[in-house]
Length: 151
Image (cartoon, rainbow, N blue to C red; front, side, top):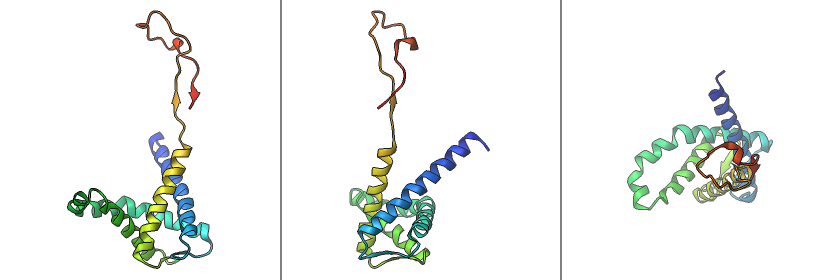
């Protein structure tokens, strides 16, 4: 396999893993309107897989057809599209049920928020810090920098 293919596979596996826990967490918070059947981890994984596929293939088409509404509502119509994608996933997965569209909207907001938080916590930015100032700034030699440090 190519290195880029392996990187993409790792990316999507990590995305599914993060989405699974975000879905289970959001369903736990919205347990009055969102129902995930036992075993929750397996059902959450299936929901995450189906949600990934719907977001990859169906969501861009929905966004394309609703561009005037999205522009007219200053982007808030995307929230409705997110709730519709959750409703589609609930239709496709038997062990995942939603009581109303309002619960789908709340659930989509919570899943988006949880995945954003989880993904932001996991990122580490690596920078180089100049250890000492030299008088000749035109010399761009890497020896002017200290070791890589995680920030």
